[in-house]
Image (cartoon, rainbow, N blue to C red; front, side, top):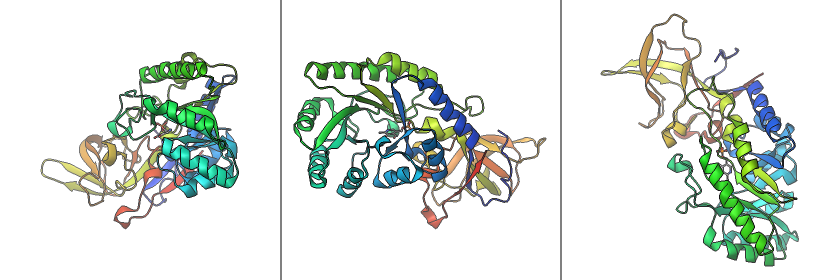
Length: 381
Ligand code: PLP
């Protein structure tokens, strides 16, 4: 990828956002769902940068939030109140009250205990609270164990065996408006089968409840569509058509029912790169270390999941010969490694390196560990 200057002169490390790519990704989604019963709620946890949120809100998408802070960010960015959905296994009373008073569109509820608390707090606020029940469908998403969420052993969602009890409680409460079912089976899913299986589970469940007189207007399938981390230039936009076609053809909707998706990574991952500067080229015993000024605090995915982001030079000399490096950060942890045995054009102190596909779960996971500054951001296009 050709990074447009002024990259030089901006303090590194920083996130470089290709806003043109973000807009064309959003347009592609809009084209795929035009005229269908699908609504997309962007999962703010993937990237809550206010500039990014504004563009997504302006495109007419809803927001999927997992904390009171994300609800505040969504409102500030211009997402309409009723397009904000709130999920998470550990919502505090303060966050629930804030959501109720803000008039958000739905609480995705993860346990019967939480349902009871929401009912009490709805009564206290004098407002009937729109709720979807998050179901744990026990589906293996065939992704990293830290980002698979729909298996029985995960902490997320209500086990299918307890769902009747939750539905009974919700329909009996004067303070709960049961509007939907919510699912999310995992993240970075690059095959169609888990989504197709999810559609089958959804159809079986909605049919089961329909026979008992309970209809769910909102069928929320969560997020999870993966991206191509190895080939960001060849595949800058995920195969949204296949994803939405799978859902639209797989889920049997009745009149008045809608599909809601909570895509995060697929929307923003490819538009972001972490730009970092080479501090030292250190000769080790049998290997060369490229020590860069970005660390695991700036981009946590490699240390957290063993994830790999494509590493490229930004401004190395065109005819430089290839060298093999271990690309590492300055943080005092052995896991502060971005890549081992990376083949790159020979670089020198001061050269810029790009860690690609870092727009999702990059800046939003950054911390000040080692009392380092948070990375900045640059928006191009
Ligand atoms: N919805 C829920 C409930 C989630 O937990 C997540 C991610 O963890 C998402 C949506 C977004 O997932 P993704 O970024 O894989 O699309």
